[in-house]
Image (cartoon, rainbow, N blue to C red; front, side):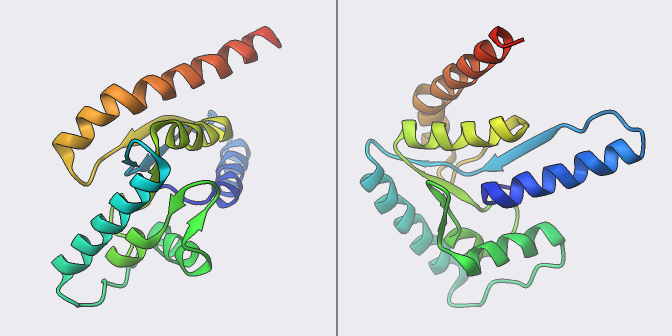
Length: 165
């Protein structure tokens, strides 16, 4: 699940340390978010608020369930601290769903979201998973607009890393 970068970095460091102590191979990390894209950042935020309204309408005014798992509790804690973390990590959908499943969103134009995803890659998330709120339309948009940008940015980072060795 997409958590704020600072908390993600701390969690990854803790897991890496535990793996080292246990003489295990270095762990691999994945990031799972629900990007909300539009042609501009402003339009993406309009779309995000519309998705939130629909999620709230589906709940019919019922409060979100209280999560038992620690990851969801961490997400709700982050949501209580701020609505938006880092550049575009939006927590309102996590709050509205009780942080169930993949409920954090990176909101913005494709380049904004691609750069936000890249920040997690730089921390060590090697699998960048995505799922949309409007599956068919989002899959088309991700394939045409987001994934190629993320791949390009990751390739640039990897090329620089190889050049520094």
